[in-house]
Length: 231
Length: 281
Image (cartoon, rainbow over all chains, first blue to last red; front, top):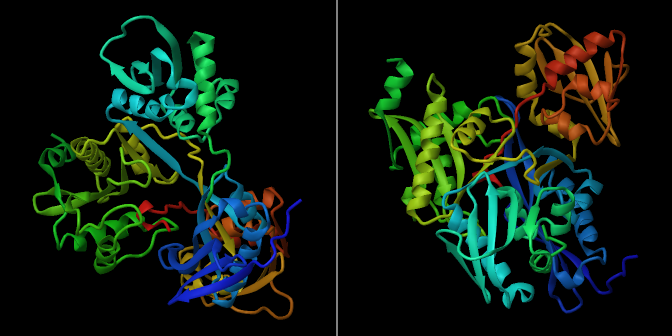
């Protein structure tokens, strides 16, 4: 059940053809906003529509789940009609909470993008993706070697030493944990876009070795997952 | 030696220079011709787009090497624009635009530009290269594959759209509807079409080979009801009329249903969609 937020006002600020619909709290502080700007979109060789481009959407963390974004959005829909737009478009993620709200206002998925990525220096890139993780409380006091095979790239051996990460030229000493996953899955896990439990259950991540080290890594990955993304 | 191979041996890639925008805009226009989505750009508007500071990248004026141009002799045959300061990930270079002139070796040109973007990224100490691809852009997909760029089908990002005023939308695309009609076997077809979706109502009148968006009074020759979830996809060419009909997202009232479906298929065909990364908002 959403708690109603008292004293929140919805305002529209116009700057030329661009508009900002915002919510202010009782102290006049901006707590939620959406930008509307005209965008020309081609529909076939002889057709072009002016679309209301939605962007810059966000609600302050402490004001979420109180129905503010929905009130802002209801006003956005009114403003777009008042401005004479025939259609509207926006870019978002399919796994974020806003996606459901957009659907409620009549937006539908038009096309999903494919993001292609190639590691130019796999060793340095894999080491960099572990740099933040190694400093997490669950790994910060751990020392040892982890083998990471981010397919399609060759395995990389990383030495974690009290919060620091170093890529090794060749494996030295005992390998405590060996991970096999795709480069895409590694990216999603380390950016906090995928929960490690999901990766394991979906057979996207395979591990061998010391179970305690795996559990530490899993906790470190979970702790940097924001759970709810903005957008 | 084949003409394509001959061209490949003469292909050179250099930094963007003032004046290139004329040929670039022509290549862009030809490349985007069949797509729904990209803005129509002139040499000036293309150049202006990159004069502005991007929301993540410096302008082309501040960093001229962001723009790379493929030439054969003095002729521009393709170009690529990269962003070397991508949002939170400063270790990644993002190729924002990749276009090659249509021709026998267009795939080879796109691949060479992508290889060059990769070399530039390495030179700048980037650890990864990224490319946002449309499922409908076969050339960029092939070039990415050839360069070993892994592109899973669902990148998690999506473009969403809503139709706010159907009658106005049809008025805006009247010229395109006329073009579609003129190029079809139904150019002689005359009559009115009433379209409704949720609370929206709109009409089209087809006469003398022209399509006009207008209110329909009386009994139309063809009446169409579209499920609100299907409407934006149908209007933007992302859902075929036949598919919508079979899925029960579209129902028709007409004396000759098969003919009515064929007329609608001409007016609202399935079309490839491409939204260049540089034009995102």
